[in-house]
Length: 368
Image 1 (tube, helix red, strand yellow):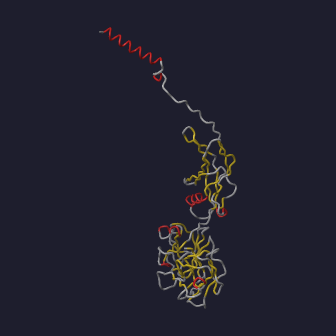
Image 2 (cartoon, rainbow, N blue to C red):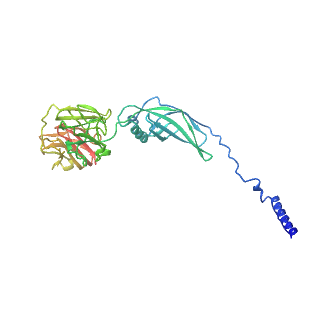
Image 3 (cartoon, rainbow, N blue to C red):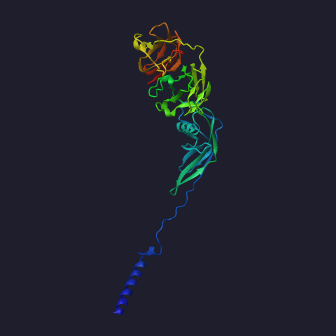
């Protein structure tokens, strides 16, 4: 029996050796593996320098891209993505997809400048670096340039600003008392100020949310001039009276100017009349409601006014004794200062919110 078992074992071993000779079990001694990939012959250079001049946003016109560096030598023999990283001195950073010529998206760039520095129009300086990213053997590789500097002069914000205070009964739901633009940088409002800390601004993009108001930098200020900022304190002049309050959105400062005439003429109504109604019945404006009825605001408005193309004028008490007009196109310049007995104003057809100040003759047509 033992001889028989030895015979079977020997036969089994012979079969295994025979199979191995045929190669069926070669991977026992030589495990399968993939050939190691050789690294690609990548030739990449990112050599850039800073722009010689300050980037002035106002001078870019309608351009959608802005150049933030000058390429000295930016090239690659593989497909690569270029990323510019900008940062301030406080550790804030933002990445932008860039072209090899140094251009990035203008809107994203302007938003980053506001995030880093705020909206005040003064020259700012960012730190920049260009990174080239490419894929190799399933990994992302990168080549980084030397640091460079980006200098930028922001644009004045394209926002509409509105008074929030006793002058309009602290109404944060309906736009009734706007600043009147003298220019894009300088905007004003002429009305009564109580001499108490009761006035702030809010902007079009935060309208109705008075948590995002603009006021005096550093807290409440009863002074003739000061700087203002987001979240600042209430403002007022040192004494009660009629003032022109001017906000400069290039310097983020404001100034009160007391009117020489502290008893401005009062009217029972201000209305708009013109081709849109055949110079017939007046379209009466509403007077901005003050929280104190002992004085009139002299600021008037009408919301959602449908106007046909033609000429218009403002007049008081539905009579021609006192009227305001000026020779200019509302389409090209939707704000200005009317003069008594001035020429008719031309206005294109459309739907408008209309504002008027009977002390200064300032008007504003805002497309609704």
